[in-house]
Image 1 (cartoon, rainbow, N blue to C red):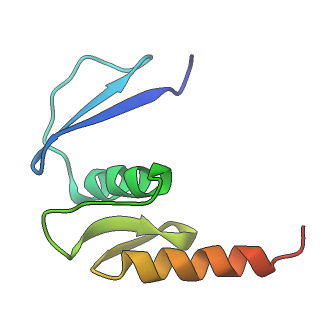
Image 2 (cartoon, rainbow, N blue to C red):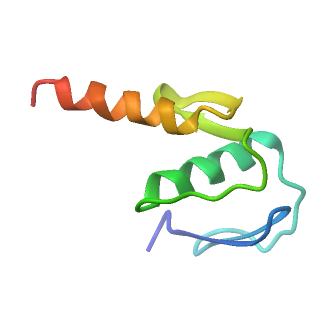
Length: 87
């Protein structure tokens, strides 16, 4: 299962990230990795997303890096934009 990742948040400051084809390493996460993990979590959430603070890093529509408290509004606008696109 190439390119498979499993993410398991441990605390607000720790995330266990496993890759089936990855290397055995432990590393400090740079902000872009945190933003990507947050975006994946938000993208796969059903109805609720919890965060320790209102503002946090995430990857928004168009792969834009964001650090704000507007993720609900940003993603709602993106969903509406996608609904209006022709299939």
